Image 1 (cartoon, each protein chain N blue to C red):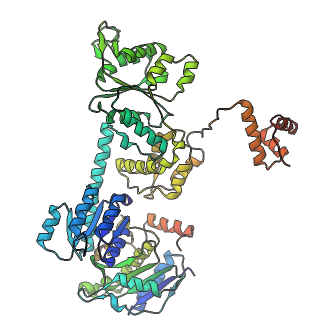
Image 2 (cartoon, helix red, strand yellow):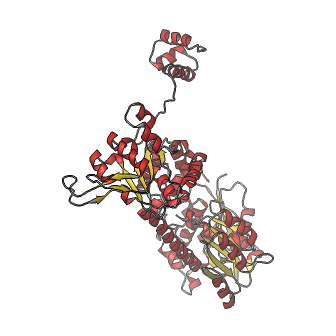
Image 3 (cartoon, chains in turn yellow, blue):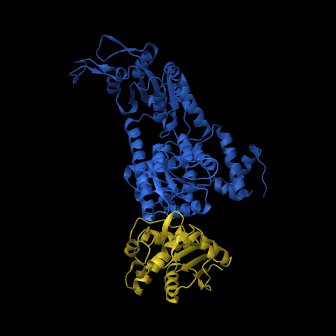
Length: 182
Length: 453
């Protein structure tokens, strides 16, 4: 089928899903299919930290997605973490089919500021390009303007552009030209 | 670059191990995981990890500190970062005392861990650059600096160790660029003369008279311009080794002088009357076929036997293709570090091209090709494009080895090969060979070659 399946996890604003569809269709030569939303897995909640373990969410995404999906991108509004790190903007299987992006820390409201939809859209697109880039074999980029650069703070996300740098873009183009990994 | 720094994560919790490993892989590192100390040790024996993240509390068997100590025993250079959820000053102090480089409390901020890893690797990169540059500066190569897994090269390396502490003369034969000087240095620096001089003389670079004064020195007034007395290379190498490169190029007179030094370890400076005695080990090298030079009367047979006490014949690179990947990776690491370029390695497709190429200029040519590729590389990894010019014939023509056979046999083989290529079609085979059909039939009869078609 070679599709990119978009899976809302829990309640996700429809506008965010539209932004993601538009950005991914520009960069990835895959038909995009929006799947019905799935509930947040109860086992993923870490009560001590008040966050959700992204490993559990990714496991569930891998199980629930169609077997022939090329990539499965989960989108959630809850805050993600792994045991070692205090938070994650998203996570991906490197060269693998599954990725997840959290919108939680992309909202201005998370930082006690008034909401700003255009900023949320930009941040969402950048993080989606980042996580999907990993699934297509891109590692962190040293160019801080590239969506593939490592962001450990929201300021770093804001410093990124909404398009890959020439090097990462070329990597993807060559990969798609060879029809690898799709 | 990052692939050169493998990381190990040791934790009994699978989720913890795998999620940290996945996060580090996104940064381009090669990451392995181990659920306990035993497995970690097993992995550390096989891989030289740059960093090991080790959880302090692991139930049953080895705890984090024991694991760290055991890893340090096999990999003293590895940087250990102790991870714990139970931050106490006591455990932190104990871990640091036992040799942990850092101590982190989980969960930590992504920025903290990212900076920690890059700080450690920056230091390691500097240490590695320092070691490379120091080696390059002193050129004190030993047998373990020769990169190979080729059985013939391994035999040669074993031989260099066996003969390192002897005074016997060594003759190293091999094509240009096969590493004759490297082997000579390995012999010298592995033996009991290592702390004494290693003097290199390139015999082909100098005229007869210049080479004579270079080798034996001269007295004041020995010739126009000899304003002061000067010691020659043999005197400078006293107690150590003299490496006479391109020995096949020296003149008959110098051959006679050299023979005398080899026999008696004594000589006169140019224009001198006092005999000078030295304790010098001679290692000579040539890319010429000295047996043929003797037949042609260009090289003294007695000198040849004096030189050829221990013979080392270095194989050309095309006869040790299995070494090409290791050599290429070594050159990428060294040259990218010297040039300050961030090149991660070579793609599998590009390596295939390098393995297939015939390398008439041998290891030196490979080194130059890698340097050129690093300079022109813009992708962070050397791919086929960087080496495509090799396939187009490269800078030098491909060499064709003619086997040691008669002209008749050579002709017979050419005919058989042409017939095979043309599936037994005599008309096409004769045309490919550039002879007419009847001539080919004659030759088929003469060489008793059967054909079909």
